[in-house]
Amino acid sequence: MKNSKLFMLFLVLFVFAMPSFAQGAAPATDMKPIGVGMAALAMAIASGLCGLAQANAVKGAAEGIARNPGAGAAIRGIALLTLFLIESMALYTFVIVIIK
Figure 1 (cartoon, rainbow, N blue to C red):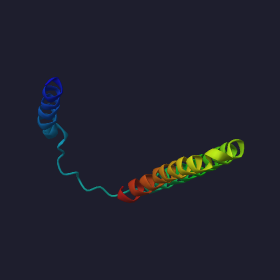
Figure 2 (cartoon, one colour):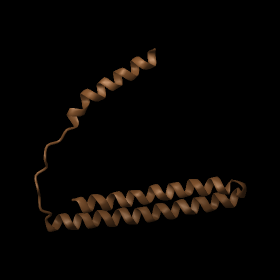
Figure 3 (spheres, one colour):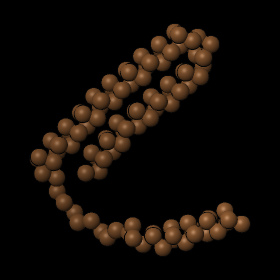
C-alpha cells in the first residue's frame, strides 16, 4: 500500500513538472568562425581523451585476464561494454558539434 502511494506521488509530481521543462523555439543563429574553431577544439579534445581512456581500459582488461585467465570471458565482456560507452562519449560530442 505504501509503495503504491509513493508511486502515485511521483507520478503526480512528474506530470506537474513536465510543463516546466517546456522550451520555446530557439532563435536561429549563425556560427561565427570562433564557434567553428571551438567546436573543432571540443571534438579534438573529446577524441583524444576517449582514445586515452580506451587504451587504458584495454590495458586494464589485458592485465586482468593475464592475472586471472579463468575470468577472461567476464573481463572481456565488461571491457567491451566499457569501450562502447567510452566511444559513445566521442560520438555524443560529434553530434553536439554537428548540431551547433
